[in-house]
Image (cartoon, rainbow, N blue to C red; front, top):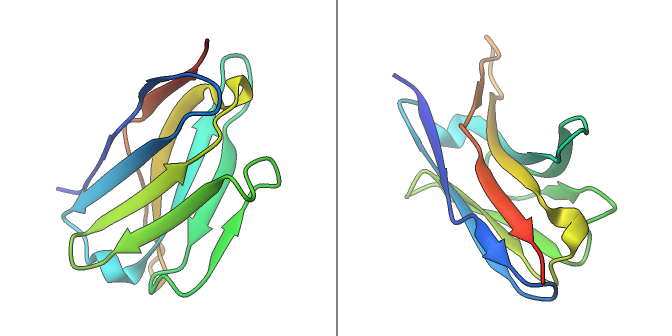
Length: 119
């Protein structure tokens, strides 16, 4: 059974930092590109950051560039999202996403973790 389990969400004040973690089980983690998405109330889910299966390349939404960093530890089957200089606009449910890079292309989602940025 495949599981992606997020943790690390919570309440932060503007300017503060949070680190999200997503630990995978039931998959060969190093075969998966991993991403973080987020969905704010009343808005569509959007891609925040993506990292290749080896961690050699990353990409970010313009809205988080320079503030968020995605990383992974394949030995721990875990992907991270370091979020600095948080803004109220970052408030959303954050979802971990894994996409197998080999055929067949399987895709998995975590259950989501709430991040609220408010003073």
